[in-house]
Image 1 (cartoon, one colour):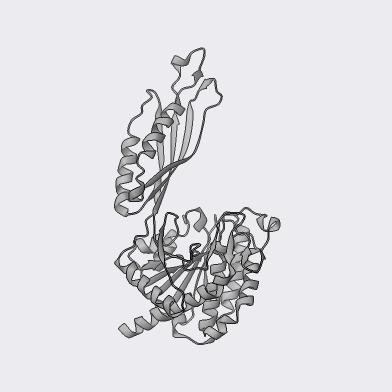
Image 2 (cartoon, rainbow, N blue to C red):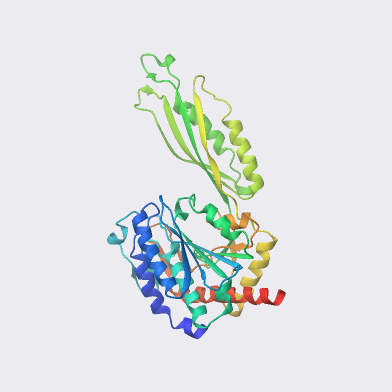
Length: 383
C-alpha cells in the first residue's frame, strides 16, 4: 500500500488545486454545496455510500462510509468550509513553489480532505478490512462554531471507539492532544443620552458602565490555569459630546476544563447582577458553545499508539495543547478517545499567506493510513 500511495503525490496536488480553487466560505451555501458535490462524486466513485445531511443556512454535510460497514469504530472528522469571502480564489488562486502550496483554505483544511480521500482510495484498492471500520464526516460550518453540525457530530461519535480529527498539524509537526473550550457572549448596556456640556447630570453613560464591566471580565483571566476572557469588540455612543445611551461588547471566553466552565459562568452571572452606573441596564446573552478537549487517560492511550506508528514510519510525533477551538471537542466531551491535528503540516491559516508544506503531504497521509490500520488490528486482537 505504501508504494502505491508514495506514487500519488502529483495526483494529490492536482486534486488539492481543484478543491482550493472552489470558494467555500461558511455562509456561501451555493459554493459550499458546489464543493460538496465534487466531494460527493469523488467518494461515490470509490463505491462508498455518501449520505447528505441537508441544511438551509449552511451547506449540506456529508456522511461517508463503506456500503458494507456495520457499526464502524473510527470516526474521522473534517470540514469543507473556510473563512474566506466569495471571490477570494479569483484574487489569489492555488499556486505553489518548490516547497509550499498556497491558496484559501489550503491547509485549513482542504489538504486534509485530499489526504483522507487518498487513504480511503488506497484501502479500497487493496481491499482492506479497515475501510469498513471508518465513518467520515465532512461538515460545512466548523469555521462559524458548528452550530448546525454539533448534534450530527455528537450523534455519529456516540458509539465510536476512536475519533481522528484532521485539522492541520502545527507548524512544528505536533499533533493536538488538548484544546480549550470556548464561549461567546454579547454584553449590551443601555443608559440615558444627554448633552455632555449642557446637562451632563441627566445622562447615564452606557460606555462608562461597559468600561467597568470590561475590567471585571478581564480580571477573570488566569493564564496559568488556561482561562482567558477577552472583550474583543466594542461599540457605542453617537458623538463625543453626547453621553452614550447604548454600548455593546463581544466577549470571547476560553478555558481548559469543564469545571472551569461552570466557575466562569457563575462569575459572569455575578458580574452582570449589578451596575456601577446608576440608571444603566444590562443585557448579557451567549453560551459556552464548545466544551474543552481534555487530555485524559483515554487520549494518552491513543497518543501512544499514534506515536508508535509514527516511530515505525520515522515520523517522530510530539503532541501539544492549543487554545484554538475545533470539532474535536464534541467527541472528546462524550468520552470518545480523540486526537486532533492529524492533517498535513502547514501554517498561517485564515491569512493571505496560508500554506501547506508539500514535504508533509505524503508522510502525513501515510501516517493516517497506518494509524487506521493499527487501530483496527488492535480491535481484532482484542475481539
